[in-house]
Image 1 (tube, rainbow over the protein chains, first blue to last red):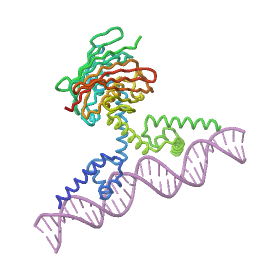
Image 2 (image 1 turned 180 degrees about the vertical axis):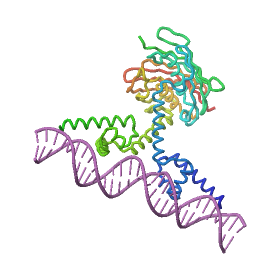
Image 3 (image 1 turned 135 degrees about the vertical axis):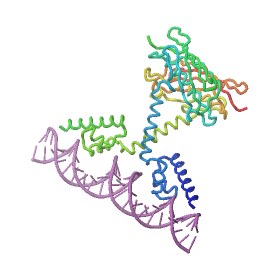
Image 4 (image 1 turned 90 degrees about the vertical axis):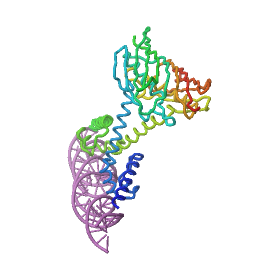
Amino acid sequence: MIVLARIQKKVRQAALQEQLKSSPFFTDDALAEFLKVSVQTVRLDRLELGIPELRERTRLMAQGAQNKLKAIATSDVIGELIDLELGRSGISLMKITEDMVMEKTKVARAHHIFAQANSLALAVLDAQAAVTGVANVKFKIPVRFGEKLIAKAEVVKKRGNKYFVWVKTRNDQQEIFRSKFIIVSLEQ
Amino acid sequence: MIVLARIQKKVRQAALQEQLKSSPFFTDDALAEFLKVSVQTVRLDRLELGIPELRERTRLMAQGAQNKLKAIATSDVIGELIDLELGRSGISLMKITEDMVMEKTKVARAHHIFAQANSLALAVLDAQAAVTGVANVKFKIPVRFGEKLIAKAEVVKKRGNKYFVWVKTRNDQQEIFRSKFIIVSLEQ
DNA sequence: TAGGTATTATTACTTACTATAAAATTGGGT
DNA sequence: ACCCAATTTTATAGTAAGTAATAATACCTA
């Protein structure tokens, strides 16, 4: 049966992809044993599916994860800075990825939304040395995977070395978060 | 000069480690060319320094970074849960790592401290579906690399589906952070 | 010049592949 | 019943980036 054989092949290739997703360090040998076919078949399948060999996969993972970690670690602004008028206002965009949501509820963890707002508030001030002093925040509506959040920050007042910054965040429909920060400048 | 030779070797091995730190995907061949020695020397050096071969290094990086990302991603509690009395109180510990501090000031980003407190507040409630509604937080003292933060959460009130949780965080000397959360349970 | 450290060379073996060709199987269609 | 074409398997040669072991040099100086 041409038709049946083709189906079996498809099924096998799907199984291969599935298996590699969960354990990406499988060699072709191990995959062959797992799928009960020859090594060459596994290699043909990989070729057809455009899946690189173990070493290449490993290298890509190492690089990718490294870059990701570095990106998270070294960026003082969380999200993407779209607009910035120093000392006055700023806008940043952040997309809710799968690893920002809680396992149980699939609702975005509050601290990610807080992080976007807080880092934007600091960025707007451009004080060489400033730290967050106080924050009053309200999470109005739960946010879920895939949503794009736009945070707008505005410096509303300055008193001595204290800056009052308001940040409002919305998805494409409504305001989901609102916050007031008091940022303390450590300069002179 | 034995001494001089030994010094040169030390210097070369230091250069090797330095180079691998910045570009860990160098092959022995490339390293040999870079250090102007033979491949064998590079291998002896690696052996002495306990540095695994390129493939092994890559594998370790891929796994390590993957686990790190996964750990950050899938842990609904940030920090280490030390004590938990469900519905009443909880304690968590978090160490400030280098990638939690801002580049300029070397002060811990506020959202990490917030994250510890917020996730602890949620953990204490154990509501199957709960989200943060409001948070009032005060960062009293800047926190720096290496410090260990102990957060203590306490459920102080319940009104309908709203829980009032206070979290106080201290390093080994003093209270550095104080927060009040209103957590909303989504279960009817 | 002997002796020890450091370096280089040589050879055999390993893993996990790519690439190509050839043979075997399979399960229907006619 | 037989053949066909896709599919699968086997085989062979070549590659990169190593390990491991052993031997040969080079260096340097006491």
